[in-house]
Amino acid sequence: MSNIEPDDAQAAGAIIMSKMLMMFGLGIFLIGLLWWAAEKIGFQGLPGDIHIQRDNFSFHFPIVTCIVISAILSLVLWLVRK
Image (cartoon, rainbow, N blue to C red; front, side, top):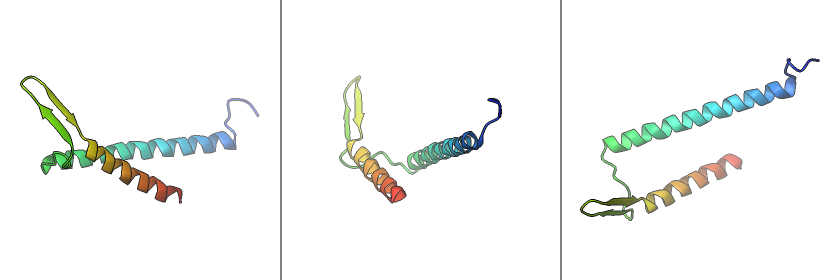
């Protein structure tokens, strides 16, 4: 067997990698679609997000939004692994 021809393990690995990349791309697309839809309906963040605006300075830290997203992702990953 030459080095040019992939064996079964290499072919299986390539298929798995291509599926993972496709799922990753689909996930990014769906996140972008949800983000776009949230902006269209006027979602500005959750209560508890920190927003400071001064004369020539603006700071926004979505702490509550980050906590909610983290909890949802943790639950989804826990369910997937189970």
